[in-house]
Length: 77
Ligand SMILES: [Zn+2]
Image (cartoon, rainbow, N blue to C red):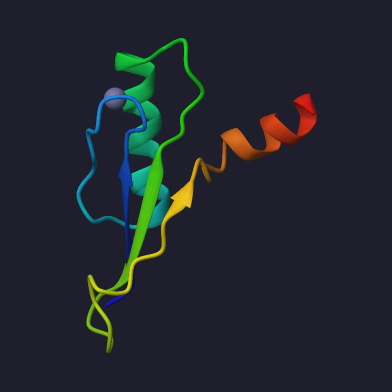
């Protein structure tokens, strides 16, 4: 099994299911578009290896690391 990702909304706590990274990010972008249209997508991303030696105990939290937000943010700086 491949790695899975879950994104949690930074505004209302909504989160996605465990999905491939690109799918989870797209779902979060869609959520922001519908619920928080004024805000750049952010929040937290959790990561797990499914079927590996470490499962949900091995989570990597990333703040606002969305592929759409990062390039924009660096450009604005
Ligand atoms: Zn939300």
